[in-house]
Length: 88
Image (cartoon, rainbow, N blue to C red):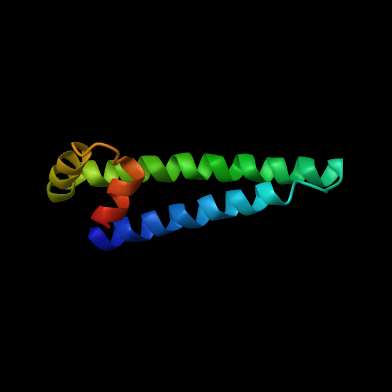
């Protein structure tokens, strides 16, 4: 189950990078292209939200991951994304 978590975390990182890349393409683009880029960014954001839920559910379903998650969550400044990366 750790391998699957690792794959989801990797997928999330890829989507976050894709979103940033698309956002960088907006400047200097024609209004028609900007509209298409924004539509793609919205799609990527939807996928990001779904994968974040999948990661959270996966952690909750596995006692060892969930116990470690709760422990790591007590550390100030450590958020869900960082915890997911550490657990993977």
